[in-house]
Length: 346
Image (cartoon, rainbow, N blue to C red; front, side):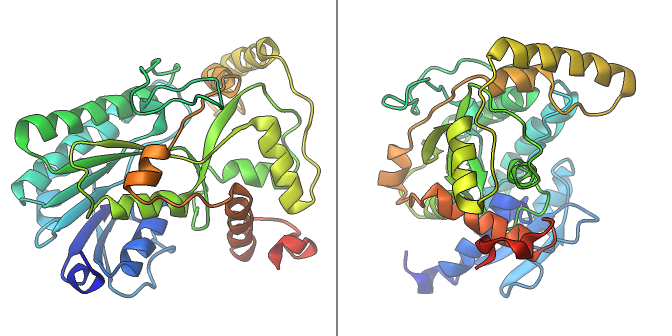
């Protein structure tokens, strides 16, 4: 499909003003698509509101009839919106939004005879390894929800999309992003980690590690999935497998701001998470570190993205570039103190 043909295609995007959504919308425009961007009622959609060829509409994943109406005349769908909170770790809201909401999106897409449906799942729905040399891939057995209903709900929704492909002919492809950094993280969401590092509020590193990736690389893979022959397939979209100590060193290299180098044993991190959980039950306030968060932070969860690189032409932007671009966007949009004092702005 060339750019001229893309101009005839209208893509319905949920979660369009989030970190990944904002990058996906820009990639869609770059590749010549038109966009109908659904955002939640009351949101200002400041990361996409001034873009040409973007129609902003307001809707809710839990309003199935309205979804059908909003999807009218759309050719394709990219479903990104999800409930992603880290606390409380167990909540029915995860299943209400992530599972029931995705079911409503599937039903609306089937009703509208959508020609391609890309669902944004999560690397948390895929099996990981603790080895950088032999990271987990799309065939690695899943190790479970890691104590988080977010992962469990995304896995349930992921399997539901797979089932709709097999039983109802849904023309779907599933994208499973790693931990993303990038501009337009207005929440902020994953960028909270970078903001905390900027303010030096992180005092130690845990023994864990993750797969980190530039949001715009995931966006490129997501949009490419609209035109590649990938119906029924799942793609892990990641890049650099790093321990948190390695990540903090990279942040220090980019910003010049000293970061923690001391690695704390997992049992101490878990004890801290346990007691913070107890306190949160009394105060009803989100703890800085819950027990499930502590356990996840001490686990090395590594993934490989070779399939997405090969079949979806996903770029592999150096993570330092992604970190720098995130800080630059945060700085220009008032998220960072003393931003003008650091060379990173140049």
